[in-house]
Amino acid sequence: MKVSVDVDLCQGHAVCQAEAPTVFAVPTRGHVEILDASPGSDVSAEVENAVRYCPTQALSLADGGDAPSPKGTD
Image 1: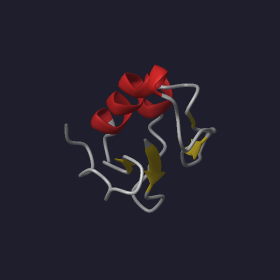
Image 2 (image 1 turned 180 degrees about the horizontal axis):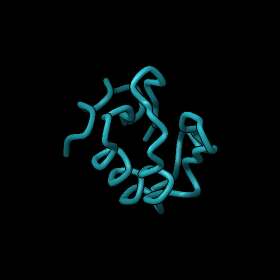
Image 3 (image 1 turned 90 degrees about the vertical axis):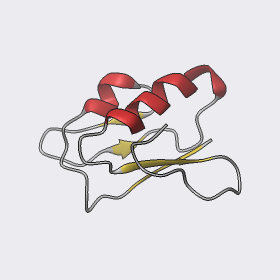
Image 4 (image 1 turned 90 degrees about the horizontal axis):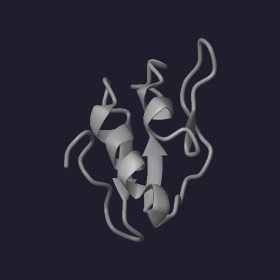
């Protein structure tokens, strides 16, 4: 699993940080920072929720060399 962010879409709502705090950090008045761009399977559910619930759909996931999954979808 590989996590990426479109910083042009990110508005710093910090939903991702609430869902997966070991993978995402959102500083006050900032955009998301990805702490672990390739998180392990132990946090995959949390990361998937972070992508799903991002209000601006700024996050996306890819598995290995695959194309990213559509933003904010299952």
